[in-house]
Image 1 (cartoon, helix red, strand yellow):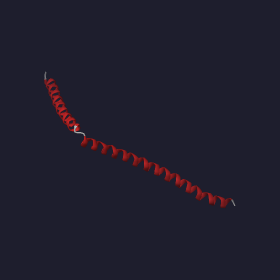
Image 2 (cartoon, rainbow, N blue to C red):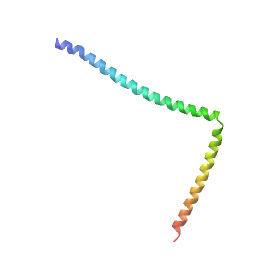
Image 3 (cartoon, rainbow, N blue to C red):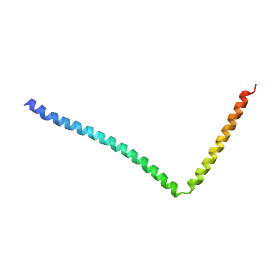
Image 4 (cartoon, one colour):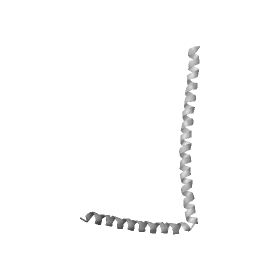
Length: 88
């Protein structure tokens, strides 16, 4: 009788362990899909805002100008430092 009882419990234990593993796998899959959906939604939202709002073009132009000015300033500083290093 004990052997028959163990025989019945083992498949039940296997079924429970499989369902727990599947539940964990599904939870991980849903988390990954949720993260991917969030990234996709934010990217799409930014793309829509950018096409709708013309201020982005002016901001992008200003950013490019500031970047070029910063590069020029850093190049000037670098040249001055090199000149100071060469002085005896």
